[in-house]
Amino acid sequence: MKKQFLLVLFFFVSCSYSQSVTDYKAVIVPMNYSFLKTENQYRLNTFTKFNLEKAGFVAFYNQEAIPSEYSDRCSLLFVDVIQVSGFLTTKLYLTMKDCNGKIIFQSDVGKSKEKEYQVAFTEALNDAFKSIYDLKYNYSGQKTVNPESVSAEPEASKTVSAPAAKVETPVLSTPKIISKTDTNLLYAQATVNGYQLIDSTPKVIMKVFHTSNKHCYIAVKGYIQGVLLLKNNEWVFEYYQNEQLWSEIITVKF
Image (cartoon, rainbow, N blue to C red; front, side, top):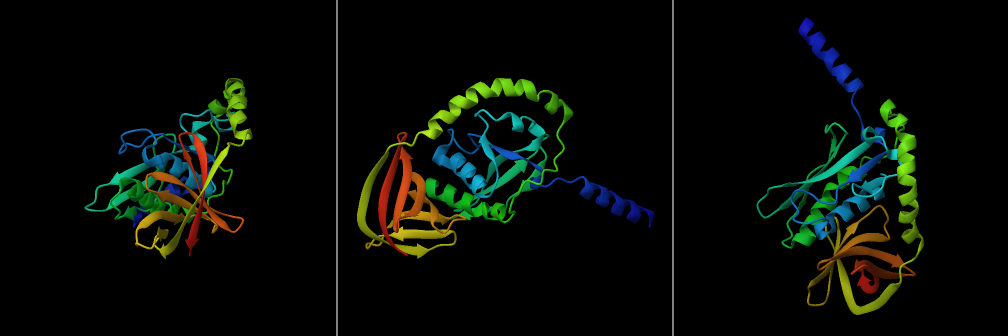
């Protein structure tokens, strides 16, 4: 009886000190994952940050300058994407760890049976993000800030403030958009995570994935990843290629 009481007490205390993702101000996304050969291969790291921001998180890359208000590492979560071995199936899941390496959240395993790596990784990661969107993240403000971090904040502000102004400069300028139109009519076939757009052959030309905005899809066309947006009653595929923003009007029937 005494052992049972102690076990219940231990469980209660553990739960009292457990952390939730809502206790953390922001998340840090690495520029590479262990299963990738190069930085941001298949644009998976960009895709991760994009989805986290869509889910309500404040997200930074681990290589960018971070504002001083986020200087306390223990107020941040550190993201990683893990590949699970599977026969003829690509499987990925996402973890969020605190500053001590403890896993605070682990997503469901996302799956894809696509053969092309670009499409398979994107589809699997998009599937894993369903459980992150279900969190309905909203920062609670309850995370305790370490005193050491607070005392170091003025120094961090001096260090970060100068480059921060330079980083913001390109954001203010709108990149020149190169436009083109694809007149071939595509037909949308529903998939688990969105649609595949096929031509009259039929051949899959593009795959699009749901976001929280019904007029915006994450899109993959061959090895190009971007977004499919509804603008002025036209579907537009926007993507970057060689540091240039392209905007392609897509004729599609949903």
